[in-house]
Length: 106
Image (cartoon, rainbow, N blue to C red; front, side, top):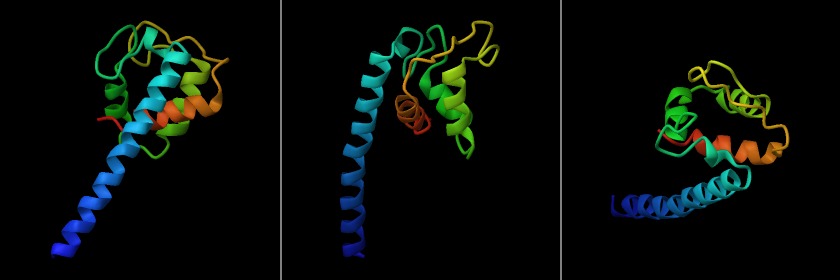
């Protein structure tokens, strides 16, 4: 039992820095691509909070692909009357990284 507890503690200690790195990367990408003009992690600004997006799409296996497409092409009426403009100049890899982080939030 003690060995198992030690393994769990070790596993958790390695996963926390990985999550922090993902958050740091996502926030750097969000700043670089002006996403934080309309979004934040935990508050609605012009667009929904990233946590609200994460909650809405939690458990949906197709969510990452769908959200990446919405970010790239823009949306209308998904979260209210204000549309999200297309983000055609944002690199697909940047979108993928941010969407993957958003889907970890709940």
